[in-house]
Length: 250
Image (cartoon, rainbow, N blue to C red; front, side):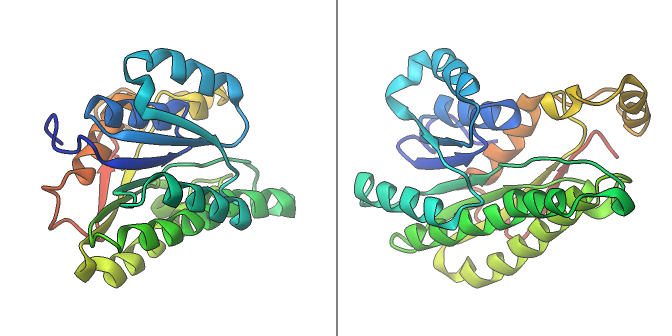
C-alpha cells in the first residue's frame, strides 16, 4: 500500500469519483496528501456529500461534472487541468461505470451503446489525455477499475461484461505504449462490493453472488481503494499491464 506522504502533492483525477468505489478512492488519495479532481456525470447530491465528508481536505478536492463518454467535454476538462497544473497530472483512476442489464436477445441497442460509451470509450477518452499530460514529466500512474465480469461474462450483463473485457485489452495495449516513458497502466478488478451497484439487485440475486465468494462476504469500498492506492504508489514502478483481482477469491 502507498505509505503516508509518498503521493503527497501529486495531482490525481478519479472518474466516477464522488460515490461508491470512486468516493472511497478519492478519499484514500486525499488522505495520502494528493490533490483530487473527482469527476461525476450528474449526481450532484453525491458530490455534495463527498465534499462535506472531505472537509479536512477541502482545499485539495475539486469536483467536476463531466460526461466521460463525451470526447469534447473530456478534452475541455483536460485543457482546464493544463492551465491549473502546468506540471501535469500524475494519477488517473478510471472508475466511471454504469450498468443496464438485460439478456442479449432482449437488450435495447441504446443500452448496449451507452454502457460501452461510458465504461470503455470513456476510459479511452480519459486515458488519451492523461497520457499527454504525464508525458511532460515522464511519470504517471493509470489505473482502470474493471471487473471479473470481463472474464466470466455474467448472464444478463453482456454489455457490461464486454465493456470490462475491453478495458483490460485497452490497458494492456496502453501499458506497452507508455512504459518506457515512466508511465504504468494497470487495473483493479473488484468482486462483489457493497455499493449502489449491488443495492439494485434482488435479494435472490445477491444470495447467488454471495455464494460465489469463498471469503463469504461482500467487499468494502475501502478494500478496493487500498488496492488502487497501491498501484498509484511510486514504488509500484515494476507493475505494468497487470490486473489485480480483489474479489474475495472468486
